[in-house]
Length: 518
Image (cartoon, rainbow, N blue to C red; front, side, top):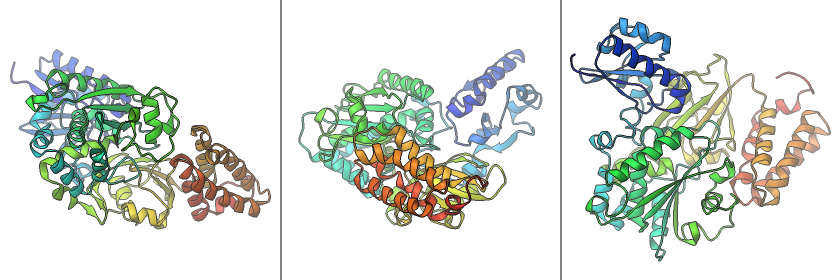
C-alpha cells in the first residue's frame, strides 16, 4: 500500500445536517474496499454552506475541493480518481482559489476549515497558542495596549471597545476576577460563534486565557446555548485536550499562570444573550436582567469584576498579539476597525460565512459573495443584526458596513447576521413578528417590554385590518418610543428598530386594503 492520502470531510453542524457523516463513512468504506490508504480528517467548515458537504483531498501539497457531495456521489468520485484530484462535475479546483473564500479577509477564521478542530498538534502547527506565549512575555500592561491599539470592538452586538472594557476590569482591585464568554448565539441568521467553536475551538480558549492574563483572572466560563449539541461536544473535547496537553490548568506551560474554563449550557432563553441575564443564569438563577450600574466590569459574576465578551471578540485577540494591534487596525474604516464575520442567510443563493474588513457595502456582500437571492427574484428587504435589527430597502444596500453608518440610519450591524428577503415578503407581518418575538422572549422585568410588546402586536393587527388606521399608526409610533426609552435592556429597547423601519420604508404593506396580497 502506498502513502496515505488525506481526505477532509467537515465535522460541523451545517455539513452534518446535509449528510457529511454518511459521506465520510462511505468514503472510508470505499477506500477500504479499494485498498486505498487514506487518512480521514473531520475538519471544521470553510463557511461555504451551499457547498456542504465539501470534501477535500490533499494532492501535492494543495487541497482540491469537491462539493456538494452526497453519499450517492462517492463511488463516482473514486472512479474519477478524486484521490489524485481527478476531474468530476463536482470538482471545484483548489479550495484556496474558490472566489467566495479567496476574496475574504480571513483573520479570526483563518484556521476554520483548515485544521482538525480537536488536534493540539494541528493548532500549534498553524500558529495556535503563539498569541498566549507572546502575552506571557508582554505582561498585562502591554497586552491591554495592543488590544486598545487594534481598535477591536465587541462583536456580540454592542460594539463597545474591547480594550477599554478589559482595562476597567484590570483596574478594579479584587482577589477574584472572571472571564465570561457569551456563546448564547440566539439571533436569527447568525452562526459565526457556532462555526468557530466547532472549527477552531482552541482559538477561543486561547483568547480567554489572554484576557485572563490581561485583567488578572484565573477562571473563565463559556455560556453556550442549549440548541448547539454538536458544538457542546466538540468544544468539550477541545477543553479536555487542552488540559491534557498542559494548555489549561495550573502553571500553564511553565508560565506561572493558572487558568481554568468551565462550559455552562443555557436553557433556551433568548434574553440570556444580554450580559447581565447571562451572569444571573451562570449563578444558577433565572435569566433576568440586572439593573446597571454597577457594570459587570465592576460587579459581575458572583459580584466580582468580570470581562464579558462574545466568542468572536475573544477569538480575534490571539493573532492581534502575534501580529500587533497596528496590523489589525489598518483593516476596516473610521471607528470600525478590523474584520467581522458576516453571516448570509434567508433568501440567498450562496449562504454562508464571509469574513471581511469593515467598509464593503451591504450590496457587495449580498451580490458579490451571496450571489443574490436564491429565488432569483428582486431583493426587497434585508435585515441586519438579528431579529431586533432594522430592515433596509433595496435603495439602501450601498450603505457601507460600518457601525456608525448603520447607526445614522437607525440600524445596527450587531453580530453580523444578514437575512435577505425577496419581493414577496409582507413587511407588516415582519413588524408584527418583531413585537411577538419580544413578547415571547421578554424576561418580564420591565413594563415597556413585557406589556408594550403585547400591545404592539394588537396595534399592528388593527392597522392591517384598517381599524382607525391613522390613529393606530400614531399609537404604534408612540409605543415604539416608550419601548426604546423605557426598557431596561436591548430586548425591548431595540424591538422598535425592525418595526419603525418596516413602517418607514414599506408603508404600503400597512396601508393596503385588508386581505389584499402583497
